[in-house]
Image (tube, rainbow, N blue to C red; front, side, top):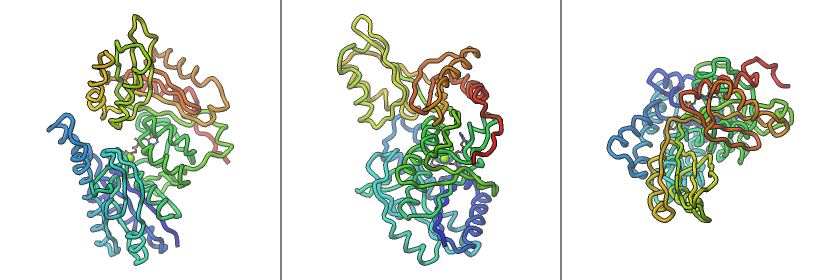
Length: 409
Ligand code: ADP
Ligand code: ASP
Ligand code: MG
């Protein structure tokens, strides 16, 4: 008997018929007598709708109230999934994050999981029940509802798999697995049979929303091997696991585009020690994740700092910089029509020329590079939003990723 955690994303529970489909899949998985914990997201679109309503009332809503609101989406689908299972004779019980013992810090809207008390779920599993858990949510030590960042149901599933020592963790979504690029944008993208944690992490943090990046970080830390699969067919998916030597033979594993970033420019800031520290301290204190950073060569005692933040945090970023700029001088401008294009591969550690190929492809198409950053296994560039998909297709083709490769042994 195996213990399995399955996560069904927003499209997979998007309406009543799809919830029935999930219930049938759970029934089939249970046929072998396995213990099942099912994590579900909100119906697709619901979290965005709730967020839009809050933003229509206030440009900068209270984050406590946002979490209170956003947790509603998953609370609907856990109950509906349990009801669908009861209707086909499966004993099941639904739990919110709090009821499932998922304790987080106080970081509203992107809280981190601190501990999970496995006892309530263990008890139900022992009693032969299927346990349905609301993804994306937890509770802090004061009993406040928190959420785990967009796409956070992936994290709920992986953290539960670790806490419950599950034998398998399966992430069911609306594509067959992890591809060399978003298959909706790059039609020639190929499904990967497997991918290393580090590559998946870089692709996820570069905008491949097939997995939430923090969930991959968690999986790597606790050694949770997981499979990304489709809830609409029986095709094998993509296994995400520790890097093995043969993976380095492939230079570029995949291409990602992130259209949810904003570029912030702080110009005319005092060019002296401490200015940058103050800017980034204020952003860190506001719990904002800053990605690419560039400082130009100062002139006439002033300099410019350019960086990217998630679009959802742009208003908060500007607000948090207000007091700092009173001390350091400078003005803030936000540029939204940008996207980040990244290529990722562990093989980059041992192969050269990847950056040159990326830059050349984009240059030939007349796509201007606004910012560049690199890590050991990733190269990212910021380009105009309206050229992003074209850029992704060009770079994907340049590395031969659209050609079917023989499965790696
Ligand atoms: P879920 O609601 O199941 O969590 P998401 O919408 O969060 O699903 O993630 C699945 C989507 O991720 C796919 O529909 C696909 O368009 C997108 N995606 C982006 N990059 C990739 C990639 N490299 N491989 C597969 N899917 C990708
Ligand atoms: N419903 C949440 C979101 O849309 C969490 C998730 O889907 O994983 O971000
Ligand atoms: Mg998702």
